[in-house]
Amino acid sequence: MISSPAPAKRQGQNMETHYRPNTRLRGIRKERGMTQEAFAALIGVDRRTVQRWESGESTPSAYARQQLSSHLQATPANLGLLAQSLEEERQEQVEEALIRRLQGGTYQNEAQDNSSHGKNTFALVVALLAGSLLVASAIVLVVAIRLVL
Image (cartoon, rainbow, N blue to C red; front, side, top):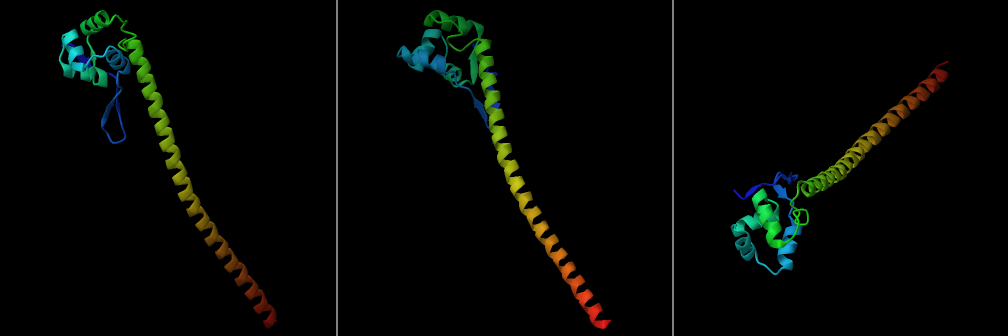
């Protein structure tokens, strides 16, 4: 098989699978004015395979990487096909995911803080009212005792 599953998958919040497109490969193909069909014919693969490579759904096999490098006169690194470039992409994905989680967590925490702040405010008001009632009751009791004595 010429392509293998892309390790650059990531899970979105709605559990759909998202892929990181290979913009380098797509850009080089377009710079040369080639359609996916023409590009596929040059390399000896199906158009759908090229589409999967460019979308990030899969990555070219070692043989396909060699063919791409030879026909395009570009290094695998320039084509975004080396493990290092894939690792860099994975690192970017992790960073993006962490930022999204932190932002989401921040918003959730702020909402929880605001919610608990409201609850705390209500409890404080109730405690102040209860305390006021106790003070008022104590004043009434003191006045009543003085009147009786």
